[in-house]
Image (cartoon, rainbow, N blue to C red):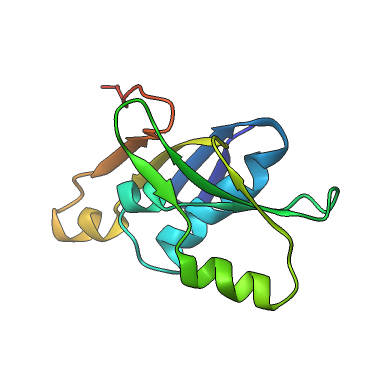
Length: 133
């Protein structure tokens, strides 16, 4: 999928992309919301457990699995309970979408006299790591 590019005042703020078929949009949106709305750092934004709903079937899928490297992803019980209470049908999911996230710290540009600070995160759900110059 084409990456999502976020700008603020014509400055690059973030880039996020994902793989995972029909789950890409939900995962990408959740990573961006985790960072920009919830204030999580880039790694925590990617590591947060995710929920997926594609309308058909009318089921909320939620992460509940452990990767081969030992990272465990599980939507908290209180969130699952609240969704169930609202009438949602819930199914645990082992797997999901894989996100890559790059953030430019604009505040660092101002405080470092123009030095760019870029943070890149690779989703541990699939392994791998960010690399670049």
